[in-house]
Image 1 (cartoon, rainbow, N blue to C red):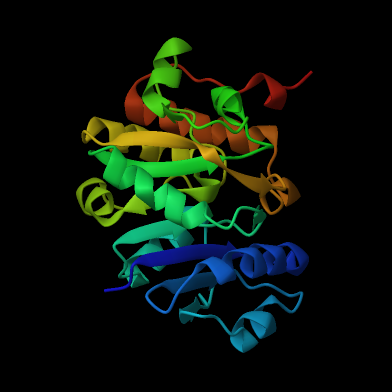
Image 2: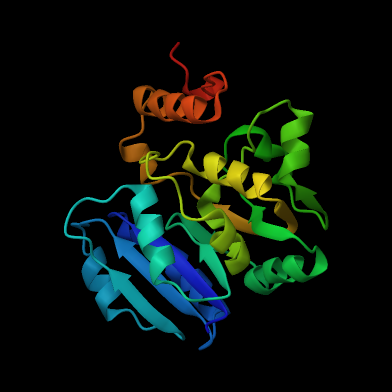
Amino acid sequence: MPRVSVVTLTWNHLQYTKKAVESLAPLLTEEDEWIFCDNLSKDGTPEYLDALKLPCKKIVLYPVEHTSISQAYNLCIKASSGDYVFIWDNDLEAVMPDTLTHMLSVFGDRPGTGIVCPCLPNVVGRLRECVLPSKLCKEIREISCKHNRPYPMCVSAAWLLSRACIEKVGLFDEQFDKYGILDFDYAKRVIIEGFKIFSDGYIWVQHYGSITANTYLNIDILRDMHEKFAKKWSIGVFVPRWRRKK
């Protein structure tokens, strides 16, 4: 069984995908695997992925129709076989050589951990207070409770999930078919199932900020996602201040 299954979704923006791949690939070994799901890119991304040489096993999925983010994540997770699944969005760049090994160590140091995420610039919500590197791991639930949020504002751009967590919690809810809240929903389910989520304060990852989502995301899409979330969990609709109409 592979150690880590890296999952990356692509939809154009090849210049960023190359940074994401080239920065993380040196941190992988032949014990790992990398699973890509390309969403009908037209900028040379499929050709790049086909020709890509990695130090680990490579799997590239090409859905015949446009696929939502939750569907694409689920396709990759179903194709994965690692002890851990590392969601690595194509707008990231690893800048620390021990990024993966340090994040993996959190699972051993803190029993019951389901997800570990690094410090990320250009993130939304209360997770901003975790983006300054330190040697502390902060539990996402503590942040949510501190700010009286009925869900953990935890962005999935660089999630490292244990296989045990995935097997108990399941796949992403495909009714959340756009960026905006599918990760908050999954994080809430993880906590309900008794797992913990930690922000690894030691590891910092460059995040260029929703490169793909910014091409289509707007206030109406975001509100639709929040309304679906509110209906599912029987809570009030909340749209972040930075996404509200003036």
